[in-house]
Length: 355
Image (tube, rainbow, N blue to C red; front, side, top):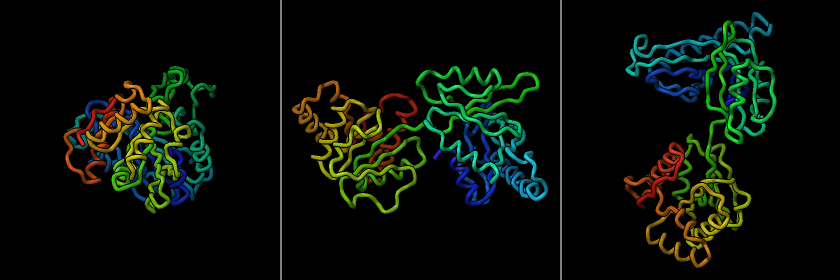
């Protein structure tokens, strides 16, 4: 679920909601540009770094929500729509935080009157090549830009920034574009956070623990199991579940360039899946749960099935970040999640584990 969808969903349940976003970060700060939280009657969702900064931001956001309740009773004009304002915070002098940096926060108030527009934006096609943009002043609706498609006449610096996207690349990172002369600044951010596709083969104890460990991390999970009763009753939102008799036959229907983690209830099934992933040769990472002995046996069998040595070298087994000991499912899950985060942050291949 992208962030306009989340806001629309909360509006439907509880009415107005505030979104507080870091749009400038200088020096040492708790969170980066683009970090955001939602504040409303349903509580606080996400964080901009905690501490005194977040406490003051929440207090200001709640004040703006109370103001919205009063204004809705008094006026019906469009000036109550798309409310935005910015506030600057010096973390050391004014808040007593040891970070010592400075941040600018964008406060945006969303009400039922903006619900339909938010829902439309949330349904935008190709979410990972879409950005949402708007001036940081009130009154202008949220707008979207889709890579490779013409858009409205935005200020020159905004149009130039959007034009500089790499062809075929993901949407631009969050950025504040300074306005010229009397023009306001504009803030641009992706519609959806970047997420690596991950296919988890197996819904056993470790698979279930891993799904819990991955919650909130930048991975889009497809969970596959061959057993009719393999999956738990409750599954976190956003996880795509695939129950099939022959998971190895699924390869052409799974996300491209995905991370594949193989941990089924059956060694022959593990082998069939590894063979299918290597044969298709359309994956980012292939990890197999097990020991060095299991790896040696699988490599021997995969050679016999015709897999080249260059491909076999890409099979990571054991999996998990080195130095994290323990064979409990939760411990293995943390080690694997840390390994995947290392890959996501470094853009390279994770180090092989020690399990």
